[in-house]
Length: 234
Image 1 (cartoon, rainbow, N blue to C red):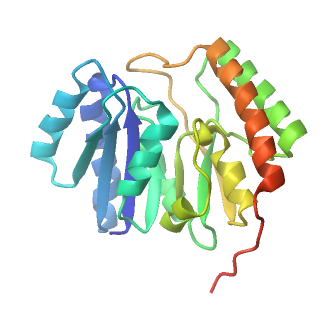
Image 2 (spheres, rainbow, N blue to C red):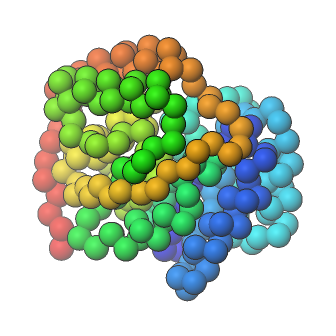
């Protein structure tokens, strides 16, 4: 298996059919083995039923359902442990990350271990963009984190990374930083970003800021204690 696409979702029944077809249009021409792993994070709409319908139509879909809503980091971690591909690709289920941009990440994989997107011309609200820039500034001040867009869900990385970095609640906000901290080679590339067509945001700006503040302190503590080393590549 060359690629595993891991997609966490919470109440995304409307977008799943469109998302699946767009992913297929990208991956089929590559003539590679791939799987798509949907992690249903305790949805209370008909997302689970929609996934079952899609599994009857596509034989490369795996689905996992959590009993209750545990958050994006938990859903990602469960998907990572299930993934069989040499490379893992992550994206949101709401189509704000255009599936077509997956091909851009694949083209950038030579010579690196981890590729992450930088959302070009973000279609988020002004308040969301301001809060993201503020969080970015704090991450640099506290952690010296140079990640350009920590909030972009579109990423691709070697599966071995899963066994090398620490996982905790909200790790996804610091994923790229943690990967760099472990000595893996990271490349950042510009990707397109769409306005929200389906569903609604799962986080308020206040909740995101509150949790981000506490997470930042925890990652600072972790940075000072984590074992750093360079990984030799053959």
